Image (tube, rainbow, N blue to C red; front, side, top):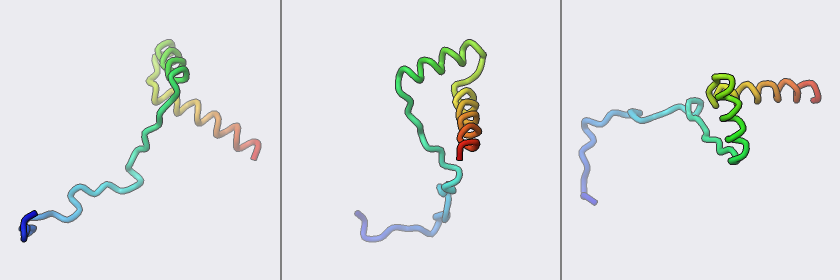
Length: 66
């Protein structure tokens, strides 16, 4: 390490990303991923749209039981 570093041209917060904007990766089991990819291909939907639609339906069902 150097004894001193020059931060005179530094920009505070240049690489800051709010926690709300950070996307958490979700890893699906192989059989689930294969099924969803097949279903998405049949309907012309992306994997992301299909998973979101399924989760929204599941959330609605869960709301009725809570």
